[in-house]
Length: 255
Ligand code: GLN
Image (cartoon, rainbow, N blue to C red):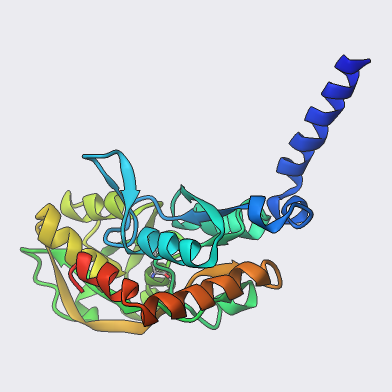
């Protein structure tokens, strides 16, 4: 009997996990709830593995920690990659995502965004030795793009006009490697992120031209869900801007 009961309890808990955190989480009391935040896996300076401590660090991680402390909620970050993070949020497997994600009108059809917390856009990236100087020079070339990103969306939107082909990668380091080893001729990446990789990882890459589609990064939930979390994020962000914590975090990463 006891055995049977326990098995049912386990089944119910398991079903909750499978059905989705949103559905189950809403019935638990506020203070006990741990919000699952999906994020990118290699997107310095926003989220990246610090090999010295084997922990994820970065602007997004620090802002989340500060906002959660200010608002008194528990959270856990899943560094699973950008496209995977979007998928988890849409599937209800994560309550939100924070991944250097640009707030765009197209994404607003499936996500609700916080206030912006950083400003950036994409830039064309080529090997140091490349002679590519304008988009016209991409004719006949092969371009690397990171699945579901703004850089990929932009590259797709102009590929026919400029006559280049596209190859997709799941994360930024793999995309850079493809450009460095000649598998592809160029890629599009967020300016601050490729700037960091060139500066700190010494990649033999350079940027070409101006920033494309500059805009704000936002914290995002699946459209129409987790309004409480979104509002806590906005209030926390305002508070950490007011008390100087936000500026400290920015300074820590060189901004
Ligand atoms: N900022 C870009 C976007 O929103 C890239 C994000 C990322 O690769 N993590 O698509």
